[in-house]
Image (tube, helix red, strand yellow):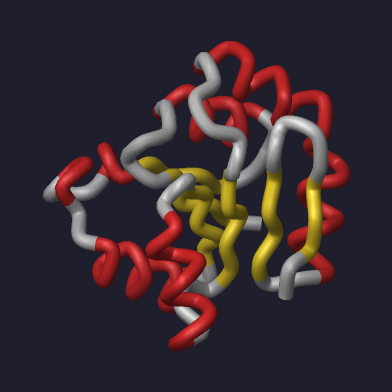
Length: 117
């Protein structure tokens, strides 16, 4: 499974996923860094079959309208510290992976993980 971590999330999330054997990149790894446009993120996601992890509702809307990005893990937990975010991923990683295998859009809050589409 391959991931693309959006700009408003920490690079530490990409490292966390990489340390667990996944292929994960952050927008900071791109030429335009955190200024990489959503359209370019969607293109990379589609071409490389990367799951976008983002808090940005624009990706949710884009998937609803155009089926872009490839897949989306949509985080709706509001403000959360980086360490708490990583702990949440660590605690729920198996459920996150299972949900992404069974759906194209998965919404994750602090209290739930739901396959939306």
